[in-house]
Each structure stands twice: as C-alpha cells, then as structure tokens.
Length: 134
Image (cartoon, rainbow, N blue to C red; front, side):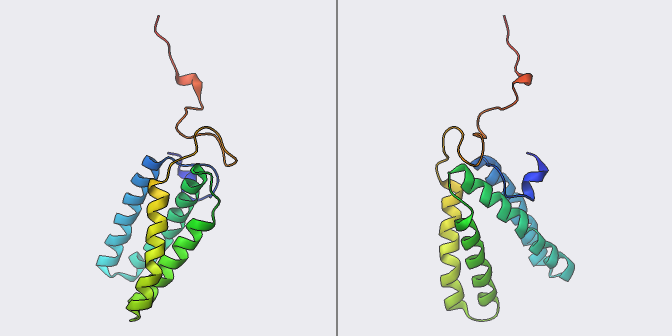
C-alpha cells in the first residue's frame, strides 16, 4: 500500500487494506495509552489523522463522501473525552454511533468498478506486471 494514502483523503481503499491498517494503528495507539508517557499519548493523537484518511478512502470505495467518517470520528473522539473526564453516560452514548458507523465502513459493500472517487482498487491498474504463459 502506498504510504501517501495515510495522509490524503483521495481515492479508494479495499476492506482488507483498511482492516490491516486499522489493526496496526489501533495497536500503536493502545500501546501509547498503556505507557502513560505524554509523548506517546500525543503520538497516538497524531495517528488519528491517518486513521481518518483511511476511513474516508474506505467510504469512497462504497461510493460515499467523507461526511460519515468525519461524523464517526468526531462522535467517538468527543464521547471518549467526555468518558475520560467523568461523564460516562453521555460520552458512552456519543461513542456508540461512531462505533456503528465504523463497523459499516469496515464491512460495507464496495462499489464494483470505477466510481466518482477513482478506479476499483480490486482491479489491477498496472498491466505491465502481467505475464502470459504459452
């Protein structure tokens, strides 16, 4: 996977690539939380940007715009902050829609073929690597 995909909201992303990147990013964020080191906690906040960009690309793969991933991140982030500072009832309710949207982004059916956000990522674009046996 091209590393530029982690920092820009353009194009489409396969479910498998989204899942793999999500697992790695979430593990890094959890390690930072467990260590309680301020630098690592700030680094985990920086990891939210690539996660948001990948979520937007995954929504693009389903033919959707960036609105739902941004809403999901906002709800999950502010709900998590509220839970952290003692308002677990309202904070927990804010996190729930973010989780539901996140699961939809992960498991939603992609658009077959090209759409307005780019070519189908499941179809190889570079045919120079293909070889044919006689």
